[in-house]
Amino acid sequence: MIAYVLGLIAALTLATAPAPTSPRIDAKSRRALVDVLGRQIQSRYVFPDSASRIQAFLKKRVASGAYDTAATTAVLGRLLTDDLHPRFARPPRGGAGGRPRPQGGPNRLLQRRMRRRCRSTGRR
Image (tube, rainbow, N blue to C red; front, side, top):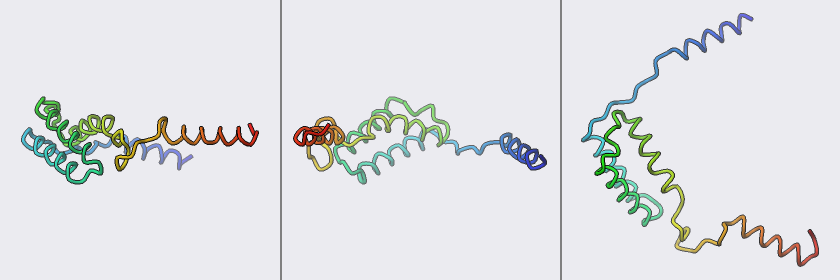
């Protein structure tokens, strides 16, 4: 029982402790950070066509003022992640190395092969 109470007190103490704050950021630093991010993606990203699209997208978003509300680095990071992840999380349509992907993805192709094999052997 004493261990339970001590654990509860420790949990409450940690829960009420102030959260660390991320550094504040001004407009000039925001633009510089997004510019550096775009250049790093352009020079290091695996798919050059996607890298160019990402860099152009970031420039357009900065010009439109999409990141002006970010007062801290944490908020800027969250905005950038929310912008980039859903749009650019997959490789380009041609697949890696410019090879076309099979329709329906690898699982669909495997399922077709398995069906053909089962039909040819008389299995279900």
